[in-house]
Amino acid sequence: MKTIKELTALIGKIKNQTAARREMIQEALVVGGFYALRDRNTDPLIRLFDAVGNETNLKAMGAWIRASEVIPVHFEGGKPILSDKKQKEIVGSCATSLEAEYMARIEAMPKWYEKADADNTPEKGWDSVEFSKSVADYLAKAAKKAGKHDAMLKSIIEQAEMVLRAKVNDAEHAE
Image (cartoon, rainbow, N blue to C red):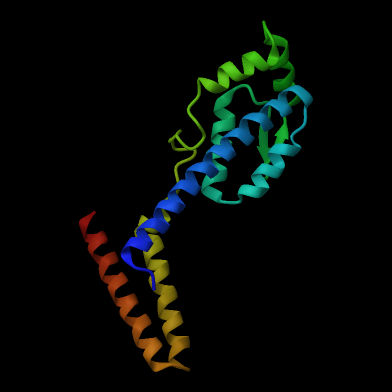
């Protein structure tokens, strides 16, 4: 078992790695968006979205691309698809170099993980009464199954269910 000091160091390491990962994703979004614009190549963005995988991050990344107005991509089935019309409009409207205008617009935007709006904020289902009720129902089923094999485990799960249902009840009456 880790000590508090070791746990704190581990959490700090996770935080640093998360920040570094966000920056890597930002760079990949910027460069992948440019290749979609200049070369009409969405493959890097498709591979990036596949690599990230986390639904909340994907929502935020998609919202960032839509807000950019310089990345000619829309989404079908969660996959980035090149928008021919938008690509031609953007390329045709550039007064100076394509790369310079693209980078100027991108640099003026907040990063994908800094932009918080209804399109990309995590759905905090775990904070909802409905989600909590579904977890309590799941715990009830798990306790029933556990009771067939392990009485102590059944008791622990039932206690967790009871605590969760009490919290749900408090939340329902607080609203």
